[in-house]
Image (cartoon, rainbow, N blue to C red; front, side):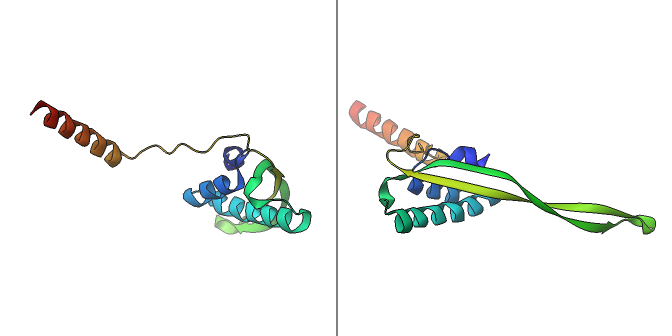
Amino acid sequence: KFCDMVRGMSVEESLLQCRMTIKKAGRIVEKAVLSARANAVHNHGMDATRLYVDQIFATKGRYYKRVDQKAKGRQTLKKKYFSHLTVMVKEGSPKREKIKLIPSLVQRRLKRIEKQQQAAAKAA
């Protein structure tokens, strides 16, 4: 889900999105995008300000098998899954526009109060 959210954004915008989220995937994707940006700039000589996330996807990786102890001396296998994260950046204009931040409730109330005060000043 997080990969779908970041795909098509500029690198700076996707990093901002990764830093502002509370999801664990945000930290992982942030590291991968930073690494992809550094590789593009250092290895391929691209302009860091014009990069955008062209492709980003997570695929199935390997898994560990561990023994899980149960009641009455029984045991079951527990699998710990891993995944692969692939990020491809390109130079050019991003496919998605910047995020439009929704103003908070306090900001909306302040605007409403200012409008009311201006209307009262005009009436007086």
